Amino acid sequence: MEKSKTLRIASIDVLRALTMLLMIWVNDFWTLTQVPKWLTHAKPNEDYLGFSDIIFPLFLFIVGLSIPFAINNRMAKGEPRSIMFKHIVIRSISLLIIGVFMVNYETHHEVLGLGKWLWCLIMAIGVSLIWMLWKKSPIPRKWHNYLQMLGWIILIGLAFLYKGGSDGEEMMSPQWWGILGLIGWAYSINAIAYLFTKENLMLLVFMWLIFNILSVAAVTGYLNNIPSSFSYFSTWYSGTIPAFTTAGIIASLIFQKVSKESMAKALSILSVLGILNIATGLLTRHFWGISKVPGTPSWLMVCTGIGFLSFVVLYYLIDIKKQSSWAKVIVPAGTATLTCYLIPYFSYPIRNLTGIELPEFLNDGTIGLVGSFCFALLVVVFTGWLQKKGFTLKL
Image (cartoon, rainbow, N blue to C red; front, top):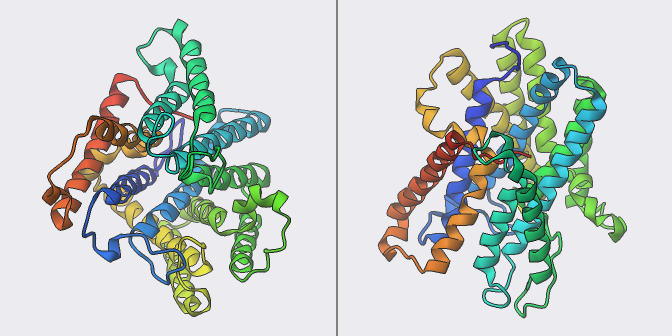
């Protein structure tokens, strides 16, 4: 483990990059035909775990892995907790805003108003203008505030012009918050908890257990009587989503505390936690099934276990054995993650608005999957190119 002004573990960046690459790949499956069932998302309430159902939980776990390092680095620089709290709130709200816009693009009417694809393209431009790290860009400083203001004007305008639903009469709403919105909810409660528990592992384990209990309560109907006025906070009190991130924090804390004594012991503990979570998830499967959409406890446990084991494997490979050359090409997806995630929100609208279509055989079966993976790699490489030119999004 290397120590410098900012403590950073290479395997976490690689795990984040690999997960983002896979997320872009599986998110492209909608453009393909004849995708094997084991790769796709399970249907709502289907007792099945597809490969695609593992990617998002793994990303939530990585968010948790990163929180202790990010906050500890800020503390090491002498930053007050009040400033860190403000930073967490701003980042969380930013994720919620972007997530809501992204999820509403999916339900925008195909042709009414601006149309689905033009609305999405303009939305991506607005998001880029607001959250671009302008001070690192080649754009003159005098334009930075104006460009951010333009971004806000664009998003506000799009909200008014929104035409949702089959008849175009629906207004924008949070819906299920979108991927980034759910990350925002999970990040907010976990980062704040870590900030004020002062690295207390037992308190965070207790919080993790509470989230797991809430996950069981949610799927068994015990939370059905919660007033609808609290529904905006359902991501928190239903337990499953924030539990992934809490597990990541616990993994980081165990690693930091135990590895000082013995690296082998730290990795062994994390491996055992991974195996126990997967085993518990499989053993309890007959109670509620393994299903992503309702967020069953078994889905939570199995994917949490995969998170623990993924970190152990990559830490051993990247940080101990120094076998990282294979990951160089995907590193931008781990260091400029938001930029990478946003690029398809440009490429899909441009492709549809211009009428660009690939021959059908290139979107079918194995050939389609290979082509889709190449697309995901191109997105990552383009992200790296933008990064070198000084264009990176940052919350």
